[in-house]
Amino acid sequence: MLASVPAAAQQPVFSLTNLIILGVVVAVVYPLQKKLRETVSRRRLERWAEEDRQAELERQKHDAPPPSDDEPS
Image 1 (cartoon, rainbow, N blue to C red):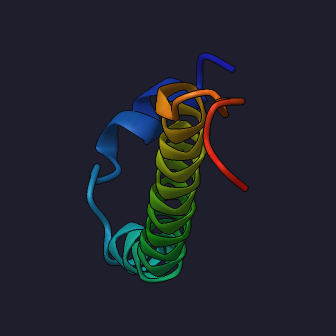
Image 2: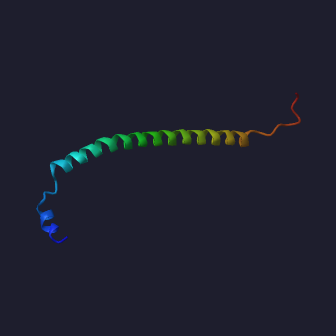
Image 3: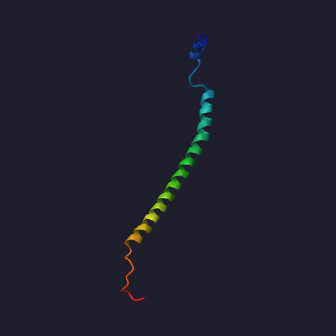
């Protein structure tokens, strides 16, 4: 175990292989993350619009005057 410590210290931190691996990971993860964010954002906006619509219906229901018996039919 101790014999490998000096050998590890001689290896470069950024090798071409590590850079290629990082590039592949970014090329795969970034588009997936972007698509996930767009989907979540769209669903959130749809949910908010539905909640606003429901709240407006409730407001209209509560603001409407009660039916009067005096009005002719």
